[in-house]
Amino acid sequence: MGLVGFLFWHASRPSTTVEGIAVSRRDITSIVTSNGIVQPTVDFQAHASAPGQVKKLFVKIGDWVESGQRLVEMDTSDAASRIATAQASLQTAEQGLRNLQQGGTQDELLSQKADIAAARTTVAQDQQTLATRKQLAASGAASPNEVQQAQDKLNGDQAHLDQLLSRQAGRYSGGDFSSQKALVTQASTALSAAESDFAASDIRSPISGKVYAIAVNPYDYVQTGALLLNLADLNKLQVRAYFDEPQIGDLAAGQPVTIEWAAKPGKLWHGHVLKAPTTVTIYGTRNVGESIITVDDANGDLLPNTNVTVHVTTKERHGVLSLPREALHTQGANDYVYRVVGGKLARTPITVGMVNLAQFEITSGLHEGDVVVLRSTTETELSDGLPVNLQR
Image 1 (cartoon, rainbow, N blue to C red):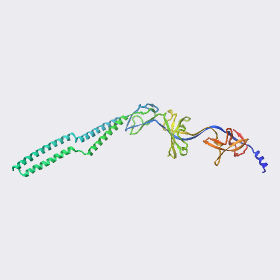
Image 2: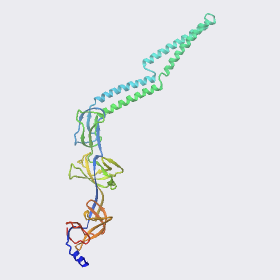
Image 3: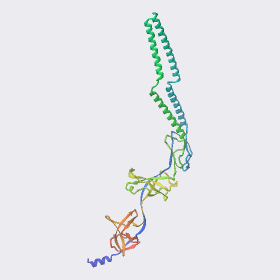
Image 4: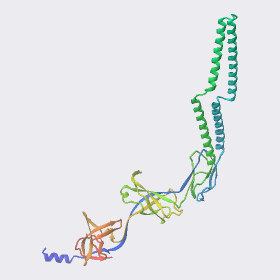
């Protein structure tokens, strides 16, 4: 085909119908979406401080309570019994310590005093006998053997007296005192715990908030630590959200967030990123970063422990030249679009800025009002110079 023939064929090609759009200025946002769990920032969980029966509930789910208001009354019979037992144990331990400090019980001290007095009397008698026999021996009325017998008896009785006096001064060792003091401490601790449990049987709220969960009924028997009820200030909430590893780099504190809860379709809550992820952990089958999101407009209609969807706006561009994503073509590292110029396509290189799922920003290569092809309405492949019939 000669040059003239090619030009004739090219000029006579039928026009391809395409859909186009004019370059205009728009706001573009980039959004990262994930899931999270709603958590109260001001909450109270009532737990049983000791085993016992739930005597009375003063609230029901949905009630708003003020700080100091009664929530639950537990049966106190077990705590009262433990107080009585602990008091008796403490009295016994303290009396035992006093006995050690004064050298024994009152009966033991009286017996010990009587033994010492008797031993002193015996020693005095021995001394008198020895003196008498020495005088008799001097006049030949007593033999040396009788004098020695008197001396031996005095020595033995004096040794017995010394033993009694020594026992009186140091009857108990340091270990005896340490052991008895430990018993006093143990009994005192048990009494304090029993008194604390007795006081804790009247459970009051330390905060103002709404009761959103009750785990027991009146007359239920519960073990130590059992959860009784939950309440929280539902106007002060946060979301603990989990973002996949590739998303983490886009997150930063202060970014705006919208929150959706499937239980209330169409309802949106708003907040901001309080804390961006700092580490990556395994969450199920995902490698995720944990972020804390503050709910700025919580008003009591978003419940704790619910699963929500969060949308974080990571980037925003206002009033920039932009086009729908379907207008963008890429070849290698080069981006381009097809402008409509004089009824034909003109492949036009461009520089792309911010991109989201629906739109992209144009930083160079196009002007506001330029008409760009979105798609062909036929199977004809778009190409530079293709005659087109524009549809908008």
